[in-house]
Length: 315
Image (cartoon, rainbow, N blue to C red):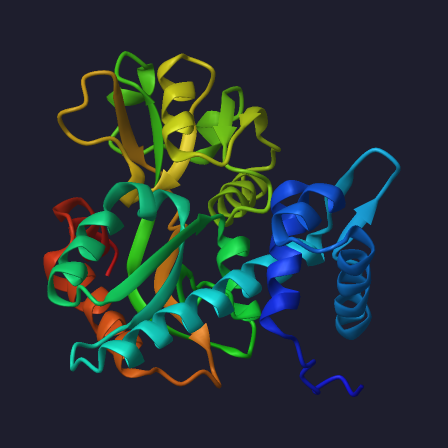
């Protein structure tokens, strides 16, 4: 089979992969599918041979899913969901626009405000099923690259050549700390003034973490990271608990009404460029095109004031 050839998978084979991924047991998965365990084992082996990688690692005690297996499971779920929705649409012979959109977004934006925009879209297009995936910047690019997600919202400071992006704005970096910190006396905080501070941050591969590390390197020191987390809410709680200060994009800074946390701009001009990203060769079908346009309108006109003002301050 050539690299570009598509393997011929049946629905039965896709369901077999999903069952093993769910039960993590060939015995339990075979029982749920009402087939024999040897037949299930042969089916999984046929798929792994066709794909060219192991989807599961087996031991005498357990079955674990590999990284490739996780990606295949996501694709299998997507294919089956698309088929289910499509068949439902055909059966109804309705004129209502139907389909599925998968959006992958960087974690903080998804937690802060995307729910409002998706809610608005669903009111206008109730027949479109929206799947929201949340992750770090690298996860979003992986989702779009693999086809698991139709589009992503991520940072566009540097993108692979096979991606295209539409800018949603520019955000300055802010330093977040408790309101009683001495840092609150300054209008801006220079990275060199944080040399002795403990930091809490997103993981090392996160876009904001890389910007903070770059700013610290320019100030001739390496930040002292006390804790890393991939959750925005946890990051804020760690700052509130006095574990350390955090460097975040302006849209993630504490609101003016927050009585425990505050922030100041990080001096030096480091910025995050936020945008909608998709594969260059991927065409936008009608439901996705409508959703794509709504994201742009929402950020530019109807997004929370905090994100819009942050963008204007950097332009």
